[in-house]
Image 1 (cartoon, helix red, strand yellow):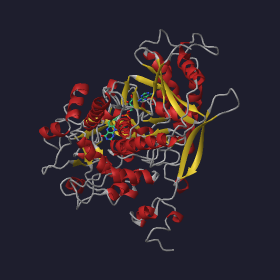
Image 2 (cartoon, rainbow, N blue to C red):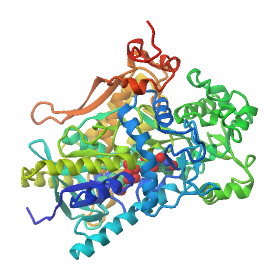
Image 3 (cartoon, helix red, strand yellow):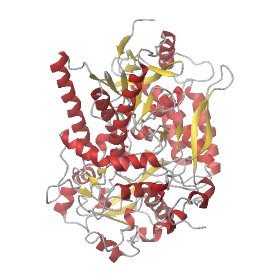
Length: 640
Ligand code: FAD
């Protein structure tokens, strides 16, 4: 084998979004030599696209807010399938993580008395999202990067080398996590520009690779979100949970076709925007589910009063959790009451003065003017559901972010459990910081605990990773015609969109599983032209394997769960089913007989019971709408 570029570090963080950067900062602060590897340019992660804000119960705008209320909202939003320990840590630690960002140089919008301002968002009882206009993610990434640079400058002062403790490898894609006796030993990847291979020797890897949206045709996600971290985890022996839960954000652009799926932030509704159908009706009043009736206004007058007097009025139903709003829009369009281009109308122009819209929603104003020739200060937007976020991900220990593979950690969107069956808006940015930090801490503690007993990368494994990466250049395939990665990607997106999309049915998902099997077979025959220097066809060929694997997990888990809950809606099982109340589905790769390809297996597990002090935070009557009686006997009001 030819010489390969090698780097020996303590911790490799894969991903430079909010979770990855926060993990890297923590690992470096704990004395770990840390590498951050990212597939795109440094600073160009999904996190930078986040618009509305970061959820943290700071109580700046409504003093009634606190971590307990945030915890309750998060659990309700996830239909109580959340890993409650993660939801607890998240609600408790999010305010500190936001304040900490300001120590890194972030500057959030202010209240009149100078505190960090917070805005309303779906499913959050009080105004809770700290924000910077509708460009919050940009500020988050900017300040985390600034902290990275500050640490590098400190290293330069101490060691004469900016990269002594923390080095960034941008436009570098990891294709394999390498193991030694079941423990992490390193990671293997390639430079996107040169196509040259690179080896990281490290006992700990933090996955922070974000989501899977590129498996779907209509999505708010950009090109990098091909489920790489999910697939790396599976292939290393970790488990993915909750993969059936995919969030379709209710409001993506629907027109023109070239921009279909691009996000329209929930802040539009948080700041007063309303949804109307083609008949001009504010239809969300028709879709308030029984479990939310006490909290949401059932008439326009009360809903409108809520914006100025939230303590004495119920919230507008446009601010129901995302799964409810997405289903309602879908139903209106299906009933023939949609807008000309197959969405519904989202109107803020009749609700706020033009100058205020431009001040609060500058990106949305710009986005619609440039992309759709629509002036949102004068006319409504056309919007419809778009695949946005995956609740499912690597099963991790809530406190350390460690997976069941020693040395493998995961944080951010690639990790599962925190959001249960449905994520509330704003809870991702806070999740990234809370669990990114914990993953950095967890990885550092793990590496320290190893002492001299460090795993070693086997060169045979490196060679295998290299051969796997080079396979698409192999020439004529043995068992069928050569396949084009772009064609297969389009076909995959169509399958997931049509058969495992927002509304699901058994027969369609069975068909999806068959089609995915066929696509997997054809993907073995993918052939790419040219050489390794900047070759997007080759990059896609490698990403395709990850997308197919992760899509199979989504389809198989979705087929298994015979109920509707959160981001999983079934036409054939339209209700939540108590039978599934505490069931978690886990996907793993099971090796078949020697030589056969590993298969995705789905197994059912029981969610651990909610701790009694957390149970006591809810009204018994509310819990009885979801929980089984035997789960409630520890509630203080429970009487036999
Ligand atoms: P990302 O920020 O997605 O970063 C992933 C990183 O992994 C990237 O650096 C990528 O290059 C790298 N990577 C991936 N694969 C590989 C590989 N194989 N090798 C090397 N590197 C790899 N959430 C909120 O809470 N509030 C909001 O207002 C909000 N608005 C949003 C708006 C939009 C348009 C979108 C798309 C999402 C929004 N979200 C919001 C969701 C939130 O932004 C994401 O869930 C979150 O940013 C994910 O962060 P992350 O750190 O997990 O990963």
